[in-house]
Length: 327
Length: 304
Ligand code: SF4
Image (cartoon, rainbow over all chains, first blue to last red; front, top):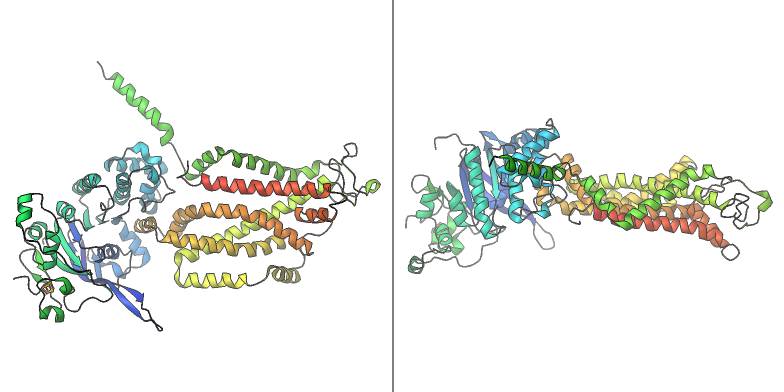
């Protein structure tokens, strides 16, 4: 990659201590994110996919320092965020925002849309007059497709899609360099999803913001992302350019995820062989040894249970963590 | 066709939008909704009248609360010529003057002690609930500890240390009532803390103080206000209990609680001395409850 990375995540780990049972409970670490590394260039969208419980949301929050990282580094323009104090962190946060999954829950029910969108402005620009703030909010509302006349309404008066637009407006009002979108469309009606995804893409085109787009919906991720990272039990399985990932997925896990997506052409749909996932997601408290995917992997062999597969290059901009990706 | 009609139309649109787009804060909204609630408005008016009468009224009456009308030391029925508009009590003191004076004491104890409780309870509860961890443990164990101290014991200690003092009653009652408030607010804060909008506030650069003030407090307000309106009557009753034990106000000073106590003793011979203060007190308690309900509804934007 030629451009200077905006964000460099190196071997990031987020473990939560969980109390075990029994008479003398010991704490077991729940490895929600276990050694994730990736880069993000300015203006780029990295899609993060995986089943629920694979640590995607935890990863997004750890990048923003909303959750403390257990180990590893999150470098923002080369500066490690995990080592910053509160004050310095607040200053950096101006450039990194988040859009949440549940649009209504992420808005304070006792604030008007205008106050919600204005909140980052109040935190970072207390010097703005209220008229100035209002003008900016109104402009932002127009940009996200909300009528500025709705500035005084409360969240419950909006539809889910509109609430998400408010959330996006709040995230975008300071002109951030990075927005983490944590399943921003999964809670929305199917008909609204495309609108919100297109809105995010339009905003990216207009402002050059980079995005971490977290979702379990492969079709949405394909539409919006430049590169895609596949997570399983808190580890990176495959990280590749969007086109090369969707055209030729190398990792058995990615392959089975892909084959779960129906193809709109019935002839092709019938013709293809499916490698559907069997079994349940193992508990992240007791991840399998070696390759975490081995309990459900159709290609698993002995080496898989002994040795953690390293991340290997499987082509330009294509990395995969599997012993048998070549087969 | 020129552009005029279109322009006129936009002007009309702007004009139509202007009133809604002009400021609309939580408080203005709440006030508008409260005014629509008849029971709450009526309660507010009655409370204002009672408070006004209690604080101003005694200066306008011909008799003071401790003045004995030696010609009428038996309980006199209402007599306008003498200026005993509601008669006298068994010691010849003007009943209306005493009731209004008692109202002054009861209302000030009720409101001030509740505000002491409110200030301490809400801050402790919000801080404990929001910060959590060790701070929470420490503060809540302290609350538990204070819960274990009996009120009368606490008041007696205060009296011994500081001497008999009217202000002490506020402090003592406030110091006991804040415990429950702190627990309620902490519980509410704990559930709020996990809400996504709090995380959103942190992500958009809000400091802990800003988040507590801007998000936590407005959201616990509904519950707190209802609890306040329940606490004021409770404090008024508590004060009468302390006075009955001789730990509160002393004769000839009085409060509603004391008047009702005295009146109850004379119920058979002179029911008026019970009924008059009882009417004032129950009216006040009812009004606080209605007002509390009204405020809670008014402060909830979902309720319109
Ligand atoms: S390393 Fe082994 S178990 Fe893991 S994905 Fe590859 S083949 Fe499957």
